[in-house]
Image (cartoon, helix red, strand yellow):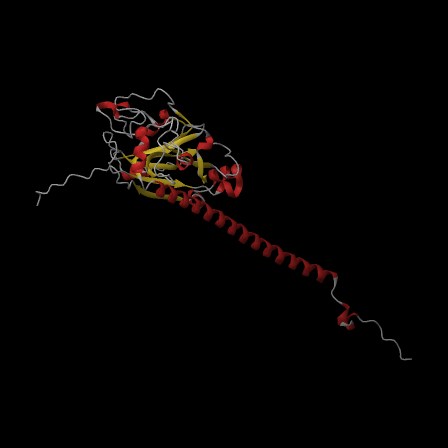
Amino acid sequence: MPPRLPFNRRLRPRWLGFTLVELLVAAFIGALMVTALAGFVVEINTTNGQETVRAETQQAMSQALDYIQADMRQAVYIYDANCVLTNDISDYCPGLTNAISFPANITPVLAFWKLETTPGLPSPIPTATTSATYQEAQDLNVSRNLYSLVVYSLDSTTPPSSPFSGPYLIRRYILRQYNWTDLAAGTLVATPGYVRPYSGAGDNNILFRSWPCTENTTCPTSNYPVVTALSDHEVLTDLVDNQSLGVDYCTTLDPTGTTYNRVIATVGSQAIDSFYACVRIGDETASAGSVQDAYLSLRGNALYKLYGATTAAGFETTKSTQDLDTYLPTLTTQVQARSVFERVPPAVNYNSP
């Protein structure tokens, strides 16, 4: 039997493995790499989530403005600031908030009269009704058009009603002369409080600006103001910003304020400039036909959908303006009242060279 060789650490076979220290070092390095990689993946996911919410917010604001633009294509009169939130009897305006009772926290910003084509009417429309006169039925049979009042408002209810994210909402209200469903069934059911704008004799004109009163400030004795419920004001979009950032495009557009004025909602003591309208001051002596336009500004807020109300409010106070701009997409557009119904063209001097 050959003699046994003495044990020599340097002659260990390779298959015996690593030492505990080597394993610990390798595990530590691996943990650092996994942690760094995990952090990188989390950062990418967070960034992608933020970009998605910001894109969704901007898209929501864009779609809301597109909807308003389409709604105003047949506008015949747009209310300016003197006639939405205040009243100016000397200017033939009793004030829209005096004519319509808005629910709590609902502040009108953009209001206009538009011409609507009545849908699905039978021909001829039955005239033997108890809620409309024979002449009204005859007029509707001929024109197939009605004036409707549309109001876009800022809803500052906190927190907003489910399932909306807030911080504020934009709501739409429309006052029609008749109920569309009843019209389709051939029945004229007048909407309580609706007064049709018309040109009467002398001071009996009910202008769009003076609606629902006459030029001599004679107002209805019933259904005045028109009572509305929150369900009458449908939500157009949420994610509307709730801050006052001192933005005033109207001053840039018209420094003197003689051509345009700004319609803006005030919540508490702050003028919330996330949704406002610069409206060309209308002709108070014309029932229809004056050409008007309006510049609309709408600012979203992606922070509330990302972080919730509490964290978003803290973010707004600690981040720089540059950082905030990425979360507060702002869109501005010009809208012109395009309806030519009853519009009087300007006089043409054929003798001029």
